[in-house]
Length: 223
Ligand code: BG6
Ligand code: MG
Image (cartoon, rainbow, N blue to C red; front, side, top):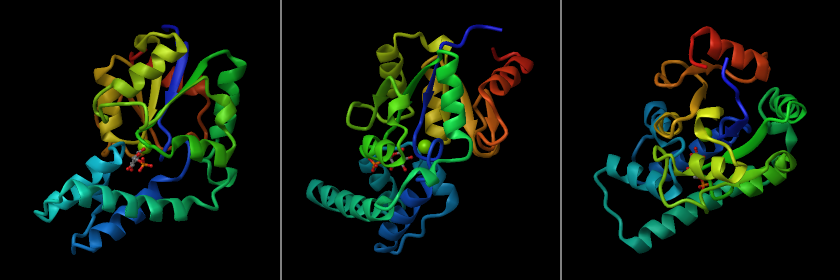
């Protein structure tokens, strides 16, 4: 088995149950133009920046927006999202996340965050897990949205590790693509059918330790 010296986590839908709040806020915004945001379309939005998500949604209704309108509707969506996460606390961390982060710390595996969200630091703080992270790369720090690997390459650089010794954990198709094209191991969190190109897909961290994940990757000759 090869050495794994770092793990980089996506935030929304991997560490914390915020994917549902992004979905609610986008679905409500889409309804303003009588566009119905389906589960399938929403899967395509996961991991995508706020502006690119808006452009994807309005394109579904053949709508074009001016730069001012884009700015306006992004602000409206974010306002609703922020009101949905305002009362968030550690109880909305996904199962076993804290245990996994503690296991990594004990084993001296470096921990980074690679999120498209500009609200990432705020959510980490709200849920009280910011102290685990040696590197935090968010939507404020990148030029290219996932599936571009920039967010993970920046994270690996900050941690001082190579992509080939790092596992990326992602719940989005775009994020898995970003991890694979950047040379990382890619572990999908969610459903196999949504995350076909991942090296391994697990439903959640519940019942999985870091050792279990490494073992599973090794059994399928990925590591
Ligand atoms: C990603 C989410 O993590 O961040 C997307 O998967 C979201 O759903 C994107 O749109 C941008 O988030 P924010 O908080 O900057 O609007
Ligand atoms: Mg995500």
